[in-house]
Length: 309
Image 1 (tube, rainbow, N blue to C red):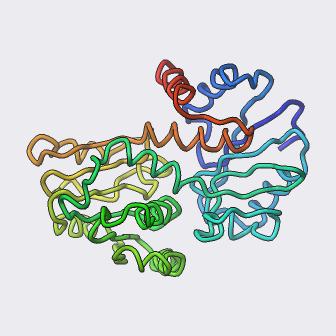
Image 2 (image 1 turned 30 degrees about the vertical axis):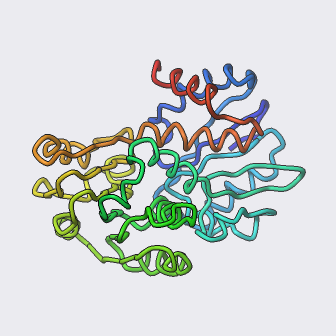
């Protein structure tokens, strides 16, 4: 981390150099009129030491041409390590105790949680209108990190009325993350039925999925397949018929997605990858950092640019 010599957007993750955004962003910057702006990655190991997170945030906060950052994988750990360093924390970030976007505004260093917005926009692209009210399915979120918390918050919004899943199940390998999720989601239990399941092995997730009713949604929000190899399910997983399966990663070994695809025809599954989530996740952050509205034709243009690369 050396002082930026031109406007710079940072990507804080684990293996940022492998991300398509490194090739996509320069083209996006041209399209958005941010021609002198560059992107740089900052890689940290999973659950990095607190002092590492604070060093990164201190640098970004005080370096004039470091404009902001997208945070992936480290959303919860970075927030907990650096909460006292932010001048402004948006309501989603406060409620979820996570940060996916760092920006600067009127001299303030700001923390935002964009996942409830970007995950919601992504879900609305492939979940049919009125799906939950019509069919009464459940949602199984594999992983209890920031993405699963954000999706739970999204499903619990009052604007959906009775078009909400009958149950949202959060499964995780460790109990501390489940207990943390339960604490953060206390308020949403007024709107949706939440269940927390400790599954230290993929076989446990297989069992949860096998017991779901038809027309359910299963999401891989573990990071397995991208940040670490493997899948949160085994090759023996059995999906309920007419269900939706979402692999929120778009790169990596994607074993979870291939396991679901092997049952796609037999069980009439819709299997979605993480591409549109990638687009919305990044455009929401770029819009916040550079104060540029990105929607409609502009969003479609950026999506086309990314696909071409």
